[in-house]
Amino acid sequence: MRFWMADAVSMVGSSVTGLALQVVAVVTLQASATEVGILNAARWLPYLLFGLLAGVYVDRHRRQPLLVGTDLARAVVLGLIPLAAALDLLTLPLLIAVVLVFGTLSLVYDAAHQSFPPSLVPGPLLTSASARLEQSSAVAQTGGPVAAGALIKLVGAPVAILVDAVSYLVSGILLATVKPLHPEVATGNDQPRNLTQEIRAGLTWVYRSSTLGPLALTSHLWFLCQGMITTVYLVFVLHTLQFSALLLGVTFACGGVGSVIGATASGPFGRWLGVGPSIIACRWLTPVAYLAIPLAGDGAGGLVLLCLAQFGFGLSIGLDSPIEMGYRSSITPSRLLGRMNATMRSLNRAAIVIGAPLGGLLADHLGHRPALWIAVGGMFLQAILIHRSKFRHARLTD
Image 1 (tube, rainbow, N blue to C red):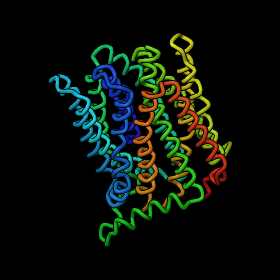
Image 2 (cartoon, helix red, strand yellow):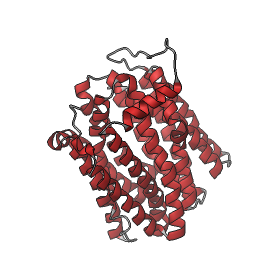
Image 3 (cartoon, helix red, strand yellow):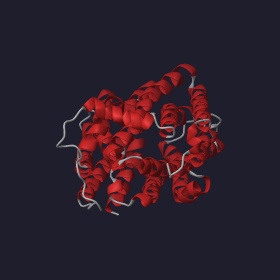
Image 4 (cartoon, rainbow, N blue to C red):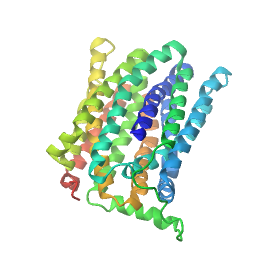
């Protein structure tokens, strides 16, 4: 419960900052679509550079101290943004630098975070626990963007980021009080270590698996396209359609509503269809929902289409994430959990490093709508590939 509460608190703050950072770039610093893409890529660049190392590091150490330390450090780092704005020192290069440091801390946190629940709940309850975490995340995504839009309007985007800084501080304090069911043990601290072999073991476990391999590879393509869409979407809504930051937040909130519904239904949905078919269905739902974005206009009808697109996207994520996390955690040995999660998460985020600036470049040179159509086409391609792979036979008994 304490872990869940800490996660919920930080998620609320993160949903505010996720919007506020991009509004700072577009509205305050007048960034182009390409520059917004670079900013988004900077958030995930550490995953590309250090992701596999982070997995080894997390498997060598207790996860709870890593979670607490990175939360407190992120609170300090994010606090630099409103401070720089108050001193009239905030520039795009400085914002990118802060985001890079923040991303590095988040890399370690994420690898430890995804590997910590098996210490808190029995194996058969991992999918249910993941669903609870996804529900709180979805609730945060529902209210956070609207709150972010209102805060940005009232006090400005840089000050709104303070909310996230405080949320990480509270999360770190809560995590320090968590007592695992099973005492955490840092494996292998008294044994000779071989970094290359440890990294290879994580990669082999993921990519040589008949089910995890196709899941990972198609996930990389999914995140590449999602990075493109996320970058172009913001500029498309604010510049092309001329909607306000508040209405932009409303569209994201619809995605949160979809996530709440999806996370609530994920357990029965997964048991009904099975692991493989249920995740594949979600992989089809995302591109179908995203078809509405490039079709949107600048009136009320366009806003409705954007809300429907985000709702469908949120529903697919809410249904997919708990099932996928429960499956991955249940079939992976504890000694490999950190490396498995870091491998998949890091290379997924590395795909965003490519996709985000690619989306910006396509938008600046071809236009916003053509760039969106290209990204949606890529989403359909990943759905076709995973549908035809052996992952369709995945089940929890694997």
